[in-house]
Length: 367
Image 1 (cartoon, helix red, strand yellow):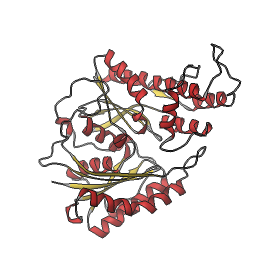
Image 2 (spheres, one colour):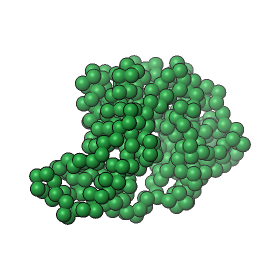
Image 3 (cartoon, rainbow, N blue to C red):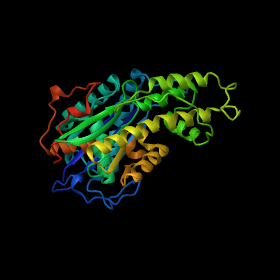
Image 4 (cartoon, rainbow, N blue to C red):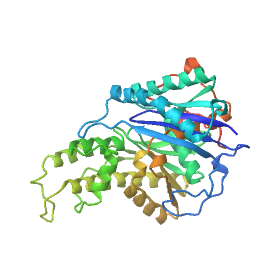
């Protein structure tokens, strides 16, 4: 009954998770197919993997500012030991129970990644446990599959650092399309800074709440290029409109509000994501969509995707903020899957990298 501890710290969230996978090894791809119910939050009555602890602490910067790598890394160094101790206590496990130490190798911000890699090496040496470096994106995908029971979905991975349309083939997660410039989460976060929206609990979440009160849909650039998308021009355009607040009026003559801008931005960028996801579904003949990553928590995105999938006779799977937002349990889960297939990261190779493509990872635990 292997147990792994996972450390995640690729951005401003520091996560520590402890997971137990049952014996014999039964990857969730072999689980029964759930009935279509868009969007599904969970279709496992009792997931094969047991989550023993899933703790997280977030570095929150002041309104109107982002999080700098050095400040974020300092936050992670300050909190990592405390979170590990709390997670071990909550899980009710001892050092002897842990089989491997999993950590985020990349992609992500350099300094925060380094802080977590150092912590993982320290635990490996202190506890005499094997290391497993994990691709952050694969962690999101595998945790999403485990929680929802989605079998072979097209994956929409949307976060602050990544925007990718992914499908599995021949032991790789193949990237069908992606953002050509900035990620969708970065687009939303930077617009939150323009409006000086609070970063607590997260700028994207606060934009979502404002968008719910928006009433006027304004024209913004729509930049889909084949299977790829571009968000920088949309951000520049909505920033210009934000500078005209107070004098800007909608076609109806009403004064445009910050809520209207948040609504318009969300509707435009989410429609772009729905378009390329539908195209990927048609290309691979998939009936399921799995949304992962921090932006995947957005209920409007889930709803728009569900409408599209339902029209195709398909279904959408998503998780809540415990698993969409960066967390340690996804790193523990993906790392333990790899560890059980014989993968190890030697101490000398336990580095981190800001660029680590999803399709670089061998997914040999899937057929």
